[in-house]
Image (tube, rainbow, N blue to C red; front, side, top):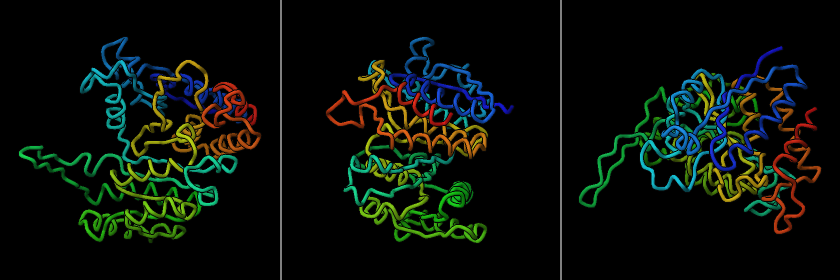
Length: 354
């Protein structure tokens, strides 16, 4: 019996609800495939700040760096608005990413056929969309040296070196090889020297991945094509700021933030989390959508434990439950009486796996 050991950080708001829903599904996976699920739970975010005075206690960080996988529910609380710097809940997430060495962020954006009508796009445009955006996470403008904001002038520095581009590009090439074999690298090479370096490095790797077709697209065109012909994309690769913008744009086509998963990988320990926030206004009511968390659990099975069949089983189970008509409150429109609870949806996914 193999061991699936995760460090669970439920966090704030609806974080504990969706985290425990995800763990319930993983328990079904472990039972079905003969694994032992071991969960070590620690506090993070405002919940941790209330108890210890810091959003990322030493015990939490020590457990996280041992891994092999960390699942984060959500962080954030309106009571933290007066806090600053490393006291804020969000500071815990940034430090976790840094300490774990996560340089590649994976953001799947898939329009489930039963939910295509809920997309912000016309149904006929959204249908068939199934992509993953691979965003470089630790470089670029967000980490370049700032030069202040004085006398009406501000400067931030956009910097990448070839090794940073290569390592995230390899993640994207390998992912495309496991999917439909198409990689679109997005840059601004007609203007930026950094993008010219980016394009050169990515192109130089293509011969090592003969089963992957590589194309390049300028970021402004990519932003347009995401909302006019999203089904063309398989894997998109781009730098930090472009990826931040494009992944949020792509999320709008899926119908609800509650559907979206993410993984931050590259180091020895992967960090997995749903895209949505802590949603304190609905916390404790049992109405949060657990799909983003459950799908993040599937990413964890795939990337941290190389359990591909198990990850695919989770995805199939979610699709089956949606096809059967079960919906959480965010997916039913005004008639909330037709909604199932967070736990009921997770139970249905677990039963589909079993």
